[in-house]
Amino acid sequence: MRIIIVLIGLSLSIETWCQNFNAPKYSNEFMNIGIGARALGMSNSVITSTNDATSSYWNPGHLTEIDNDIQISLMHSEYFAGIAKFDFGSVAKTIDDKSAFGVSFIRFGVDNIPNTTELIDAQGNVNYDRISYFSAADMAFLLSYGRKIKENWMFGGSAKIIHRKVGDFASAWGFGIDLSSTYYKDSWIFSCVARDITSTFNSWNYQLSDQMIETFTITGNEIPKNGLELTLPRIIFGASKNFEFKKNLSLLVEINTDITTDGQRNVLISGDPFSIDPHLGAEFNINNYVYIRSGIGNIQKTYDLNGKPIVTIQPNIGVGLQIKGITIDYALTDIGDASVALYSNVFSIKINLNPN
Image (cartoon, rainbow, N blue to C red; front, side, top):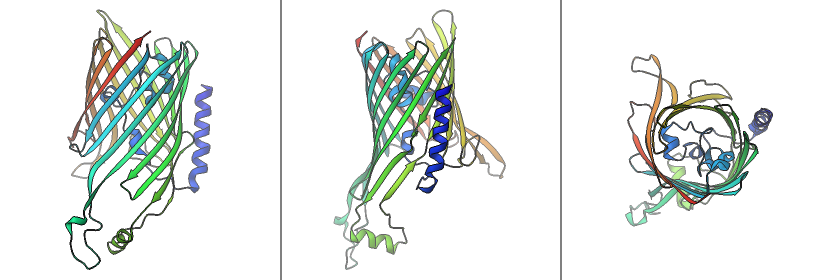
């Protein structure tokens, strides 16, 4: 409890201090999409129940729960009909019976984007040979550590380096820290994860040609300038309970609540500067062999065609199969509410090496 109070206090202090800086809403939002088909199938409600290599991202303290000396986790997903690709890879290793560490890499990018800013030359001629292609990619490298303080209490942290790149025109480097704590009480698990607890600093640098600057000016676009961008803290609280049934059947139910500090968002409880976004997930376990998952998240307030306010939700589903140290997970997710129906297929795999 003391750690949770300290994290909240630190977050509030930093949020107040950062008001004088450029702290746009949704900065580094690619880091909040979620990784792993298990988590996405449960609407990202997993900070108390993740116990594998993806803990580097979700809750680094849970790296101590891995039952193998080395574990590898990989994920691939595509969004917007395959235009955007999201990839994740992680390796976790136990140090001793009380500690473990992990190394992770995340990339969310769009490739082969045509650059037409120099399509027209200085004489006003259209020259299609002047079209080039570039990638816009957001990347993150995480180094994580987890340790057990007591048998029912653990903590962890991640240091992350952010690199965002838009072709040869713009790039940014950033650094941030995540902290987490988990407490076990009887059949309940409680967790708190503080992301970007010190705020994540992105330093942007632009390299624009004279032709591009002229094009921006003619088209009325603002010319970007070098500067510092901050990602404000996000506090996530989670609680879960596992219900055991006969014949090796069990049901895990988990609820997580995200508290953002970057201003008013369209979530269930919207405020300024704090907004609260709850989401719920469930996992049905059949003999530690087959897993059936579902979740509800992305709860938003919107309006129907008649202007009547309504609440929309995003349902997710997923399945998992574990065979001899290899776990294959699949999730079917929607990027918005059910009426949009832009579904994405997410696949991930987990491989155990050197069982303890």
